[in-house]
Image 1 (cartoon, rainbow, N blue to C red):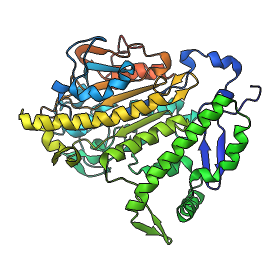
Image 2 (image 1 turned 90 degrees about the vertical axis):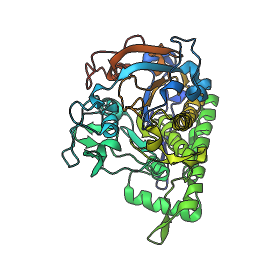
Image 3 (image 1 turned 30 degrees about the horizontal axis):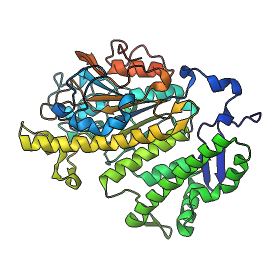
Image 4 (image 1 turned 90 degrees about the horizontal axis):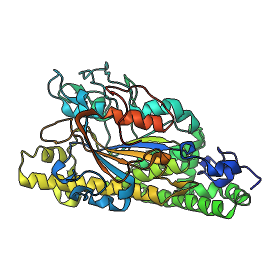
Length: 447
């Protein structure tokens, strides 16, 4: 194709701007054979609270011949793009003389590798997180340097865990050692952030107008889309149609919860909450928002907290009416261990949903999952012991071809810093980093 489409092309309409996915028409012909290192690679970090029932998480065998344990069985469709990493540690999440507060420390330390200052005041201090190191260097290449999501609201002040600020237990992303990145839990607000035109006042007006006349964001960009399709080849037209269809499907799902949950009036127009009452649907909508942002190259870096660390959310929908934190303190009670196992599997089912969606999206070179690195886990291993070694860690994706150890269970010497993995990941996305937190080098055998 002789016509080269600018990479940062947007479909525009009233109060709306929709970024486009990577199309072949955006690449010079010589770039169609680009090397794996030249691909656009995304990074995501998904955290779960209160530890894991590790007996149903850790495979018995190392290498590629392992059997997926009960908790990880839902990942069978993406197994070839997944590694289970055993033995990694966040040493600075241990007390180190600071007494209780393991939940707050585990969240604050998970992506930083730095021991947080014990305070419930404004003088919080921990360290910059791996996602924000990446955002600082490559975030300027996208409309949003990074995207912070969650499914449970959290305070940024007050005492939430034995003298530790609530900011520690409700945040995993830190822009600086004293600046937590607040997460968004409302999928409607995330969607509006993506597809507004950058002017907050005009975006609000357009949102009201769409709500009043039941318009989709796509209704405002149809003319731009039709003109663009005339410049595209057959495969790019199909890719654009698939992308816009996914935008509309997500918008319709968000709107469904808007109508069910709208409860705040402003200027005569009711503003919806957009938060589903069904927890699984909430997690999946936030996963869809992350995937949508990656698809349109709105950002390449994201975090998502399924719940705040120490959360005592009930899982009544899967037959566990007790609070999660209470269940995690199982005391080796078989009934509590079984309930914890069910909660852990529920979380993995939602993670599998996201990975399978990423795997289904074809890109110029491979799939979205091929061109991503996604970490899943948390800063506590066994919720009863509050230990921060032998952490539950999954790494999904192929890093644009840089990650070679997919489909394996790899075991490291106990005490190996988790931050060694993050240093390796940063290098693979073009952000060479000598050290992060308590890292001692790169994690061997992966990249």
